[in-house]
Image (cartoon, rainbow, N blue to C red):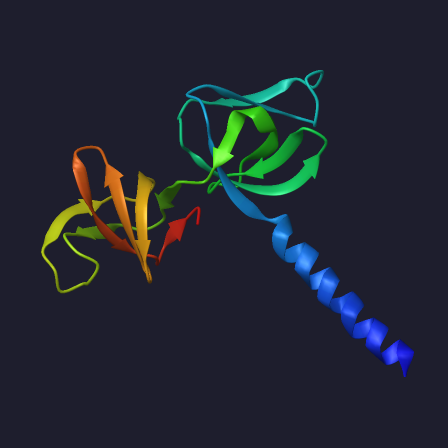
Length: 145
């Protein structure tokens, strides 16, 4: 009887830990080095030049986070270069609306690859800012939340 209880608890904690493994953060600075490995002694693989750019964290080792972006570029970034996620990338062209309904006035067309800064979330909608526009987009075909 005891074995039956232990196995479900183990599976519960196993599932709980894997659910927390992948999460999103954003770049804290306009220039962030991405390295081949989890340390400052590893060479720089490439450099991000966009503050607030969203990244998925897929692994951790001490003070480094293994990241992947929406184009599947990956590498290691020091945790001091990252902050809580507040941005999204548009994967397919979207319409920016005046309010959080598809029946409200369209504000602009947002092209694929555009970064959006999230100001608020309401059900399946995000209030975002991009360039000179503020409005609402639904949560479909977005990367970073």
